[in-house]
Length: 247
Image (cartoon, rainbow, N blue to C red; front, side):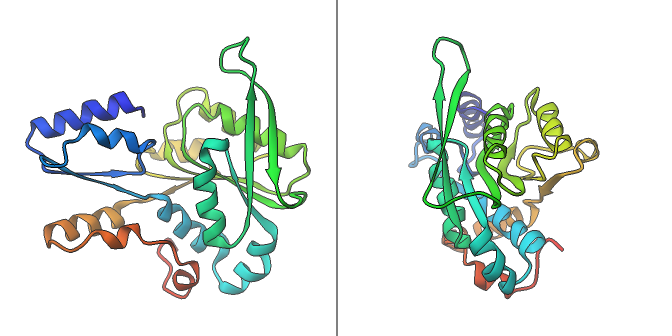
């Protein structure tokens, strides 16, 4: 959940004799600097590809839909300026519009956003918006962003985030946004455990399994095959032409 906790886990693993640590989508690359590469290797696997594959399988399904709908009517939006890189990866992969949100904070009050500016080269009115982030913690940032986007007459709003931390009051906020018709779907991975009852409580939550990718990574390490294929750019056309993974 945070760099301090992750660093503690790294130290525990190394004390147990670990010589290769695999992580999924660390919040900050700086976290890896705690590991001495001469003692223990570390690979941070981009888990965004799991979200991209799932979106292809469940929400796009065909090249025709990609060309006629996604490229013209979808937009990928960052939660803040710091998350621009993640949103840009999605916009580039899907050939869709990039939207950047910029939070202006009220520094007279703690954890308060006074205004959100939406930066886009084209109008987002009526567009399907995918908010992209590496994690959902308390959902305060996405709540404020969704409220702002809804005032701009966008179409459907979805969230794609890797790590479902869901600290209180995240579940209540997401449930309220969905009940008010402002949030359609939330797509996350299982890098943070999501018990079955959570999906009953939040029926609009899609949890993407990382088990197949984890098995492939372990197999690659065990058979001494290169890990480079896990870092390749996502080719959406090639993927859409292959058998679906999540259906």
